Image (cartoon, rainbow, N blue to C red; front, side, top):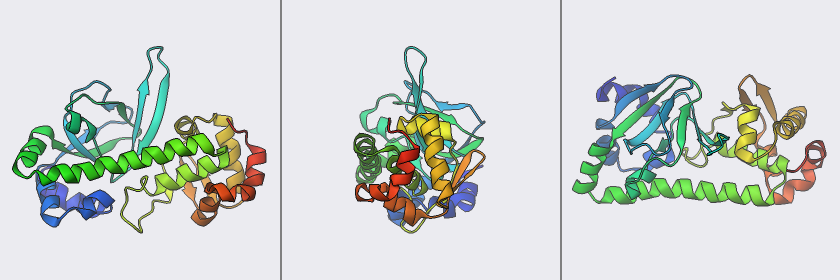
Length: 250
């Protein structure tokens, strides 16, 4: 698919992203006119830790698992990307290699703005560094919030907050846009939160019994985001007593 096709097919979706939607219109056009479409089969790697920086990506179909493999072959799932998230900017700032692995959870499609095109934009208009810095800052903000949750919250609150964060693309979707069906399974959710699959299953079972969500094959549908938001607040833990009794804190 060439650039005009990509603009036509994916522009409404891409516009749902907070970072892209806040770019000046001329910057949006500059970015997309250099984009090419890349397909990744289910289970295949888009890139691996240590790979050279190929450019900036926007996921427009499917989903990607971000993770790493340790020296003793243990796998760690750190996050799940869904459309229309942009990523890959870290390597642009430090000119280093990719920091983690990215695998397609299902057959996926992405827009790639190649590194040479980005470097030309940066050289011609240094304001692009500010725009890309804002994208990087979104990721850092979400990372700090996730680390805080891991340190201070019990399992039910951690699960509720992570599901809500994923529904809004970790704050990277434009205001008012929420994806209520999250393509994640219990094992992947547990890996992201450092919780056992059994704990995740017990928490989700309790949430489902309360009518707050619905477990589906390979996905979770959020039914009551207000209730999940209350559970996710530290002061809301008393209301989570039933879920906390059903699940261990690990």
